[in-house]
Length: 225
Ligand SMILES: [Zn+2]
Image 1 (cartoon, protein in one colour):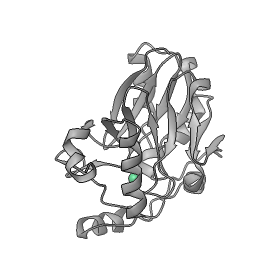
Image 2: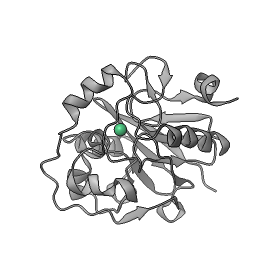
Image 3: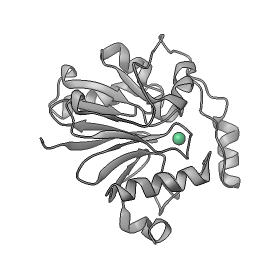
């Protein structure tokens, strides 16, 4: 196995990640209008556009896939998403937001009807159900379905106990504060099962869609008995 390096690319509110192995996978693309930030990060890490093998989207929310349409015009690589969330990507709309509290209800009122206008006929070439091995895309890792936040959420799991988890976990104040479950959870039971699934797979470092990395120690009182 070759060594894999993960670079966080903060794009205003959301993170994109570069997973760099023999080739490089882009995970999530931020809100619409942020493709340049990702292209700059590729350059800044001494990578060429031809090193990119695919784009993996953790779920069907616009702050995670909004720039994929413009990015795909620059990079001729397949786009991967879990099957249940694929329709939101194709339509450029939000997967349903299920608020857990009052603050989330207010955010929902603002974010619910968002739509990405310029979609340039994007197709998702790699639609998966449970999991997908990423060896053929040049990275020793796999994506596994981790539903709960949305029903089609998925995470990229690296062999050394790191996972890029989208909005499976978030910080209390979005970009900072204590780690906690996200403000929107479509299915609470599935969300808890997904957390246990990753912990059982040996994940100890969670790279979320917003803000800094989260260590298992910070959340284990909630999830580890
Ligand atoms: Zn989300």
